[in-house]
Structure formats: structure tokens, C-alpha cells
Image 1: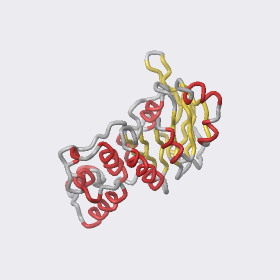
Image 2: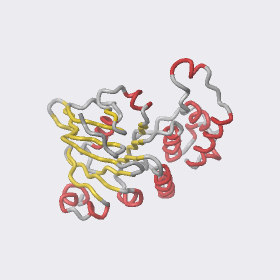
Image 3: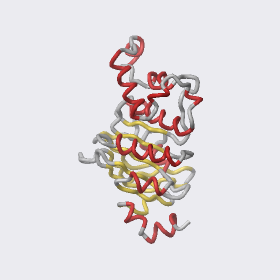
Image 4: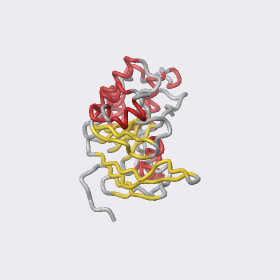
Amino acid sequence: MSLPTDFALAVEDLTVSFDGFKAVDSVSLYVDPGELRVVIGPNGAGKTTLLDLICGKTRPSGGSIQFRNRELVGMAEQKIVRSGVGRKFQTPSVYPKLSVFENLEVSVPKGRGVWGSLFFSCNGAVRERILEIARDIFLEDELETQAELLSHGQKQWLEIGMLLIADPELILLDEPVAGMSVNEREQTAELLKRIARGRSVVVIEHDMNFVREIADKVTVMHQGKVLAEGSMDKVENDPKVIEVYLGH
């Protein structure tokens, strides 16, 4: 039994094997409340698998994942979401035929269970929350626009907004600026720094300029293990990191 900690997320000795191959191998990671952590590393390093383990999509072979001192290993995905963990995947998964407003509306937590859903209505408070999130994600002028008509970057923002509407305390983002323009990347950096005030954010990213812009702390993974950890300056100058990742 792990002792209570002050960390928002405490991953300890986490391992998962697929057909004998250790995709994540004895990884430990500690994220503070309000911290913006970026996980970097070459393809196949185990970064996305790590997020899959935290959000319950994949079950580990061993180890512990504690979120606010609550063990997540063995918990169903939906229960993990309800406990305050939000996850965004690499490809935006918005409802293309719905407007921006409707995408945000269907993401509002509708109470708990059947009755909560049945009696949910878009009242003034809900509408105000949707407008507030739309402003945060730079889409207040696109509320009536169908999601399929948005640019790739705007779809990424919308999906982040769909997470934010539930007000999770931990947000996991997989390559949020992939395919974005330079201007959209700058706006996304501003957005992520803003949403990390008051919650923890873990980001997987390959764009080193973007990482430098946002990261409080960087974890470098290689072959399923943590290779290095610290400030961006520290990991950029680590000979092992240069050899296996930044040198390429």
C-alpha cells in the first residue's frame, strides 16, 4: 500500500508487456498539482502507452498509478474520467456534424446516471460555462460553425474545450500541436499555460520549440524507460538524450 503523497499524480514502477516486449518498463513519474509536464522521446519510446495506462485504456502488468492518492490501476476508464482525469488523443475526435456549441454542450457532465441525463437542460449557468470555455479555446466566434468546417488546429482546440468543460484536475494530451500552423502553436502554448493554473497537465510532444515554451519539467523516455528528467535546459544538454533523441 503506497503512503499518501502531495503529488497530483504518482506513477511508481509501472510496467506493461505485450507478447513479452516491455513497452513501459519500471517507469516512475511524479507530477505536482498545477504542473505542466512534457514527456518526450523517439517513436516507440512508450510515451502514448504511458498515457493509455494512466487513463485505464491499457492494464499494466505491474506497478501503481495514484491520482490524488487514489489508486487508478484496476479502475474502469469511465470511473477514472469521473475521478477527474481527462484525456485527448492524437487525432481530434469531435462530432463533425454538430456545431462548436453543441460539441461543448454534449460534453457537459450531465449529473450522475440515467436521471441526471434525462433532466439535463442547457440552462443559463451551463450556457455561460460553454461561452467561457469557447473564449478560452479561441472559438467564441465559431459557436454556430459545424465542427467539420473547422481547421485542424481549431478541431484540436475544440477537443481540449470538450475536456475542460468537465473541469478535470489532470489533463493528458497526446501531441496537441501536431499539424498546427506556427500561429496556432503559439496560441496553444498560451492556452496550455493558462489551463495548467489550478490543474496538472501531462503533454506528449515532439516539437522542441513548443516544449521549451510550455514545460515546467521534461521527462525523456527511451525504450520504455525514463532516460532523463528535469528542466528543458538540463535534458537538452544530457549526453544520453542527445545521443538517442535530440541528435537525430
